[in-house]
Image (tube, rainbow, N blue to C red; front, side, top):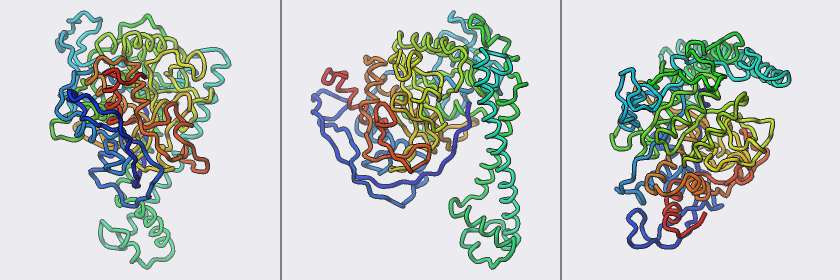
Length: 550
């Protein structure tokens, strides 16, 4: 499980052209005659007005035409297309960290294994897993883990060249993390000292940017006022900045303690050999999170399917999804065996969509996962994978990202059921591509909202997180919607519908936050599009009626 990046994004305005499609038959209950697909036009007007608090928490569901935000038109799809139509339940497996199965916005949308009884210590339904009422836990009671290249060095996996590559990566990460920690410490200390000095000068605990402008200061106080003025020009909540810095310090310190520590072994408590595929008698039937910080899976699940009918918290993308919780991603890199078995568990227990918001740069046993992906394809299951948060071109063979669907040759897919998702933010224009998002004309299929996404957190909480980990579940929710209302469509068709129906923005974007060179989305992804729920349902209807062939 990777800590997600945090960014603040603003909203511009955009004009749209609307392209009409053929009218539907009058007997269609889900789509009105004359339903349209939306396409972005080149006419863009910059807008300085920030998002309202409600829109900031919901921007990924908004619509470019109606809301001037590059969301996925989720609300519009529900208002104009889905309305009160009943779809079929669709099981979506979330292979991730532990999930808060008691969360107020998730407890009613969990998959329930009807053949299993809780806490009996028996495999009641005979599926090979004990007490798996809502899913399974392949991590047992483990949580912190090494990154894969650290494990390779600890265990001596692979030949000399493979270990040398792992060593180079570890050295690179160690340098990066230690330098980052050395920058965070003085910044946090300076902020605390400046805040304390200004509070004393003003004689009050809370102050604004205007208060700072009224201070006549010299020497160190003048520098402290300048420092705080800079901060308050970007945010009105210094406590939030302090918490972010403290959180970052804690995160990077734990990387040194666990992820990058060659001496650490987080797997012993599980009791298996993670590099022996035949050793499969491990784990337990309780996929709940073990600590509050184990929040990634809960956040992902909310994006997909948080209860839309309870008036609490947030609304997920899919209204008929049932979340199957599969705990297989630790605070570190996932094991190939866990992921392969998790995929097979999901397929064997009825999932039609699998969300995979994880990834790593080294994979000692990728064939186990490749075989599981082909197994999922053979059973008509769509696998939605996050592209990764390293701002890398995945078409470059040096930038490995596992799992993937092109083991035989770079860009040549060996299976048709994997869709890889990059992330955008809420600002339409050159900065629309999230600066952390990986990209690739051959190896990233589509983009979706993934920056500053508000969703569920453990203990009935909610917060913003950023990453392609947030973009993938948006697409997984869309896939679940299609499979709910058009259940005869195959996983391959659903993938194609999502890719072909997205919006193609008439703007060029920077990658990695660098605006010195700009690219169309078609230059950095397969589809050149941003996933769009409204359009996807329109196209799914056409395909299901035989009016369009993909």
